Length: 206
Image (cartoon, rainbow, N blue to C red):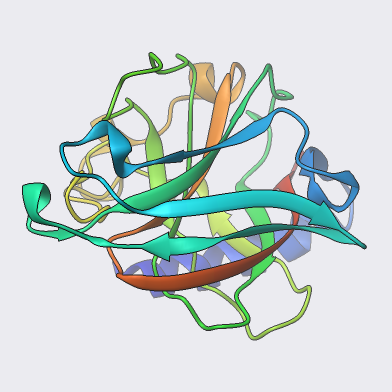
């Protein structure tokens, strides 16, 4: 089943469930990115991508440039990492990400895990998926947990084996109950990215 179909089914389910249940706020970037930091591809030889994270007005901004990296034969990455004990979202059906990109950057991923990566670790063990951005604005994008996978390619950022193809790579409930870090990546697409960050929530049946 294509991810676009999964997103459509999940969105319908989430709308139905949300009418009777409350969302769970994981991060409110409108009040600042406290507890989050920028990390780049400097952990790989020759890494030269750069980025910044700051708050202004009613949102936080994650901006920078992803550069081509000869060591991985492709564009590198810049990411922001939030390290803390996040709320239990094991009762939810999906994550809702509210961000937009005024410059139309198309290389965003969201990820989470229950074991904080070592400071020098280039490849964290995590569950991730791409963020299909909405048009500019503050509309949230609903991403079902079935779209996340722990089988992904570090060079490109793309998922190798989807959760729907092999449940062994799906995020288990034990992880959703015990998230210790979350990440938003700009990866695998060279160029400038400008990101308006608003919120991340657990949604659907929570």
